[in-house]
Amino acid sequence: MFRKFPDNESCSHNVTLKVSEAKELDAVTVTMPTMSARRVQNECPMNPMGLKQFFLPEQFERLRKLMVPVRAAAGSYLILEGDPTGKLYYVISGTVKLRKSTEDGKTFLLSLLQSDDLLYESSDETNLTHSFSAEVSEDAELGVLYWSEFEALLSRDGDFAIRFMKWLALSHRATKSKFRDLLLYGKPGALASTLIRLANSYGIACADGIRISVKLTNAEIADFIGTTRESVNRMLNGLKEDDIIDVKNGRIVIRELSALRAICNCPDCPGCAKEICRI
Image (cartoon, rainbow, N blue to C red; front, top):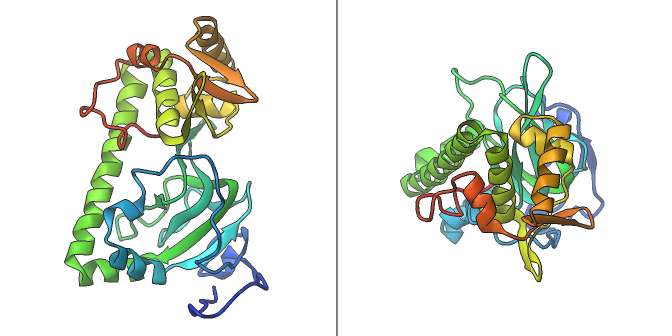
């Protein structure tokens, strides 16, 4: 079992546990920080889809008090596809990749969660196991919520439940827009859409355009759009030759965002707001 620390108790001794010791979660080494532990400062812009944006401060504080704080190292898995549902993970800092595998061994990257995102999959008689895996790609601090406690909070506070439904609806719209771009405009359109979404989620304005602060390999980008690394290499080289993008220090710089938008027929705002067009 995880040990819950009172608000006034320090856990600077970093008790090391296995997540599997906490109600049958699979093994991943974590340490227990206080919820007030420092955030990892990075260059990422504020997350407009972040959970905090949808709740009043006092409502989020009630949610925070239900969280069991953990740290997870890069390369570890929070959940594996097929694991029992029953827990939610709030990302305090770091990044988490959501992966989906197919029967023929292919792997797709569904999403890249960042600070203030919630890893959510409901737990009831119709959904007993997770449909994806969650891999920590950058050392992360998380708050673990038990579904039963979260559900009780929803039932007690109607306004809280409505606000959560608004966050959930926006998340579903973001997912639908991803499928639209992946299915309708071929692999070049899917790549262009993915680069735009990365820019909206992790883009930093610079002298040459928009620098995507998160570092991804071509193989990982290929997993986002369901193609091979070699295909992504060719398409990225074509975009570089056309001076649409550049690569500096292993990070992609978007020089002509309008050209990418034309490739994937990106609709104008508010048809697809930045809150929706995210990775």
